[in-house]
Amino acid sequence: MEKIVVNGGRMLHGEVEISSAKNSVLPIIAASILCKDKSVIENAPMLEDVYVICEVLRDLGCNVYIDKKDNKITVETHNITLKEPNMDLVRKMRASFLIMGPMVAKFGRFKLSMPGGCNIGSRPIDLHLKGLKALGAEVETGHGFVEVDAKKLIGNKIYLDFPSVGATENIMMAAVFAEGETTIENAAEEPEIWDLAMFLNSMGADIRGAGTGTIKIYGVKELHNTCYRPIYDRIEAGTYMVAAAMTHSKIKIKGVNEEHLRPVISKLQECGVIIHTLNNGIIIDGSNKTKAVDIKTMPYPGFPTDMQAQMMTLLTLASGTSIITETVFENRFMHVSELCRMGANIKIDGRVAILDGVKKLTGCEVKASDLRAGAALIIAGLCAEGTTQIGDIYHVDRGYVNIEEKLKKLGADIQRVKV
Ligand code: UD1
Image (cartoon, rainbow, N blue to C red; front, side, top):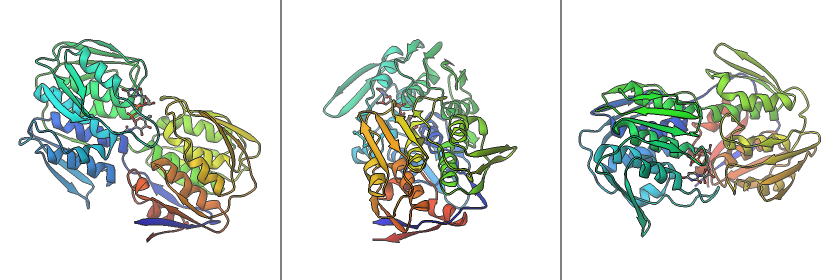
């Protein structure tokens, strides 16, 4: 077991390089299943979640090579089999369910363990299954498994009741070889959806409109080899932006696309943070006093739920009262009790959190309850008085590449210790 220890009170300076998006790379690795022979992912983030999806593919018979030195992942699919993957492995991570679409597209059927519950909500898969059924698949669930059988997938019009990221991705991948035209309406518009479509198109798929609410997939016969570089991680970038704002520091975030961060940038500006966009990055200047703001999480291009915990941390010290409404997940306020231990004044009423800004946070022992909650507590530690120890740090390792190294390089007093 490891924990992160932060001595608060240091200003940050310099620049930080952002890794590729975890939420792009997971579906992209799943989509590699569709490739005839070999796909290469460049600048892949070396993260726990990425290793898990690679393990799942290996369990199916793929050769997966992870080159940690060059951040490159190579997937060879010629030995892939229609095997039921190890249940414990699949249940480690909900995103494992993203292999369902490609496996059904490739083999016409697949049986997979139901994704487990998760700390931030029940997260059903009804929309994934609705899409597969619309393409002509028969779906059976029971005894903890989902079994999908499709003699032939045929393009159809699918309307999603909610723009689910995972369902949009799974349906998009399932439809790649479907006969004719598939339309996904009310599709998720996240940049990572666009990235997955670009990866599939780089192998010869014909997907149009990804990144908008209507995606059209025209079935093709086969996908060829590719080498692809995913987009940068907008949530990792947003996390460092909040870290700078929180410590009233000025830093540069390198290599990011301002457009994907617009919802976060606009909220930070409302808080009084000064932001300059450059050709190859963003400069964050947090020298102003932070003002309270209201936030409602929404599907993209709304404010991302994956930035809610970090922004809440910033607002604990803002002048005035902030209201945060979490509309995407039903149970994503588990960091609140930990922030309150550090001195924050937050009340929760269902999906609404009401924050009254306090003068300071004080360091203590806290626990990461999920990935973004863990990041939020590290940020809180950066400006808290004294020492903050964040336990259950394995959650953070699922989604942040070398977080303590990157923060140390920015001047933070932070270290990882074995417990
Ligand atoms: C993805 C991201 C996650 C992010 C989330 C929302 C990955 C690997 N993970 O998760 O970091 O927080 O998008 O931006 O990309 N829902 C249903 N039925 C379904 C599917 C989803 O009701 O069939 C509901 C969920 O319970 C949840 C909401 O839709 O309340 C959003 O889920 P979804 O967009 O599917 O998120 P994920 O793809 O799981």
